[in-house]
Image (cartoon, rainbow, N blue to C red; front, side):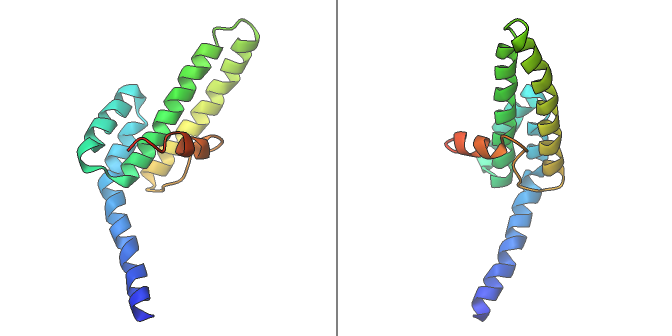
Length: 123
């Protein structure tokens, strides 16, 4: 039983070190599409799990933004959906960036869980 307690206490510190190492890359991932590409390249060698998590969330946001742009080409109804969607996307982006800054591995609101499911094959 004592060894289990020792194991439990050593895991958070290892996770915390991993989080600290990937924090910069995770933050860069949320700053424009170029930042996403740079973060992906920076994380390609080390494969930091915290950075990978936020890269996937940021990629999901980028793909959602592209989809909103395509929907926005449809007159009237598409414009309305695009207009509202941009504000929702902005909220999700801010929450993702705040989570990366606060070193939290938490999905962005609304679609974050789906991004985890859809993008799980990306390493």
